[in-house]
Length: 160
Image (cartoon, rainbow, N blue to C red; front, side, top):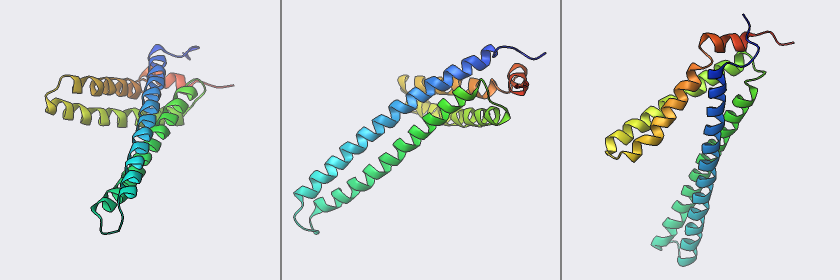
């Protein structure tokens, strides 16, 4: 039997994709802000140095490299946010490509969450476990939703 409305687990996964995209957007903007701070520190170090032999000149070059790396991290976070939004939007009309991409994306998110969960458990801080644990739960649900019978039937339904 072909379902006429999206199954509840897929709706939950879709909402989780939108929540994850919001977190990724905030993280991306935060990394851009930190990159701007690193750039300002680098510029201030360049202003303090008078020659290339000055120890402050190395700080300026390192600050520029750090700012570039932070901008790269921010762009990756914003790109993943765009992927999360695209997957969530395409759930209503998407086919097998959206289903498979969602499963892979959720599995990779679960693996990253597990890595950070183990790091948090090793730190001994209870607060360092909460966010990675939520990430693992969200990633597990996003991975499982398209794979269960109702999710597979939803993505295999005929589209007219």
